[in-house]
Length: 152
Length: 152
DNA sequence: CATTTATAGTTTAATGTTAAACTATAAACC
DNA sequence: GGTTTATAGTTTAACATTAAACTATAAATG
Image (spheres, rainbow over the protein chains, first blue to last red):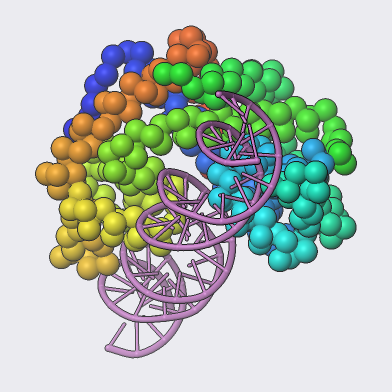
């Protein structure tokens, strides 16, 4: 109804921003079913995937990887530990840190779920051809890097 | 560590998917500060923005617009109503519906916040030139439409 | 008209999420 | 060495989010 009319550059940027947000949301909703079938939430999958691909990490490192706060990771990690999917061990050389790593059960679970996730992502991205996928990745990386840096 | 190695198409799709997700997250985190300064959460902003641009809607329509469940909208709308930013009115012709619309206070708030949001989005997207922004929008729309449709 | 089916909205339980305040530990600095 | 500063992790309050069960109303169907 009351539509705000900025300049051309603003409308262009808003169009790209909205499309980006919605595409990411749609893709996330689509992959959520896979996690749920394995009894995992999206956050839990993110943590297990990071540990699977990068090896043991501390909570603060995990927070950076999955773009969440440390306080949030405290809860997600606790829930994963309750399910015996990860284990925490204190580092003797610096007692502030607690190393988080996959248990055997966690390794087996993520090892089974991730390939299915990868195939679903492939099917979802199949709406774009190879060149388009590469271009999407390039644009998103450029944008992500700039937004990450931050300053205005 | 244990890295799953799918085919070339899978790695390509995963690269695009991860970049897309992270770019959207980064952009969302960046715009969150604007909402917080106005005392709004991201969800609340989304609802106010939809009403601002589309006029009165019912909760189910809002749920579709912001890609959330109806149950979620019940809470977000209740919180906005408590702040006197929106009002709900029952439709006499079909008593299942409750029309949600902006109050004067809500209209003034979103009318002030949205232009600032638009400018911040423009500055964020400035990492890409105009042609790249249009291409990003095109790719995301194509992908979003396909993911929305759903099949497989 | 009675039953079935569909849709709008609410509620509940479990998990996620943040900001902010907090504890604990380590490093830097005087 | 004692103080300051920085970092890892936890806790709390408030809000978000979903799935699933639920109520209420309307439409379809026999």
